[in-house]
Image (cartoon, rainbow, N blue to C red; front, side, top):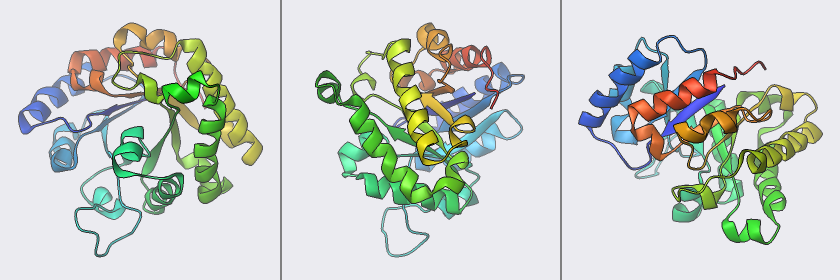
Amino acid sequence: MLVAGNWKMHGSQAMVRGILPVLAAELRSVELDVVVCPPFPYLSMVVECASGSVVAVGAQDLHPAASGAHTGEVSGQMLRDVGCEWVIIGHSERRADSGETDAIVARKVNAALDVGLTPIVCVGETREQRESGRTFDVVATQLASVLECAGPERLRSLVLAYEPVWAIGTGLTASPEQAQEVHLRVRQQVEAFAPGAESAMRVVYGGSVKAANASALFAMPDIDGGLIGGASLDAGEFAAICRAAEGRPWNK
């Protein structure tokens, strides 16, 4: 199981000093992957504060190029250099705010894999797309670009995150059954592309996950954890979500 916290554009040095020691203490004996993804300015500080604990560190984005004239951007090797092991790619807010296409997302996935970062690749539909019955088509199209670019051999090295756009930051959450349905379709698509890869790949859910609904979501057979937004800013709430995930260990 994997629980990753996406702090988005929130944070301060005081917040890092407040949250990381609590997580280190609360989660010292959990048996799952726990990741915190703060904004770029706090990555080194979070790495330092998380040292010796179960908490690993990830970034929220990277540039597809290894280096060069890309003002304001950060490469995968730079992330590795400061201690990151994970990176979120293709979040719907990046797709909307920065115009990231499926092709750009796929290139970023390869850039992460090339330097040994584990990408958490986000896919998901808008409310209008769900209401018009296009959920599976939208997710399948987003996923196909990643599969084709990464190739069958590297699929086991990434994590997929189903994040329905209508459930991010809205307080709405896909029911466990709705999430499970999409997660199963994702696995079937991966299996068709690279037989055997689906059983080794984690597919996590994101979208207003809280301690109150985490256990029900994580009980679904094809949900391998969560990508947590707002709830990851509260150390106690995030720790409770992690403990809910530990109740259904990932056995792949």
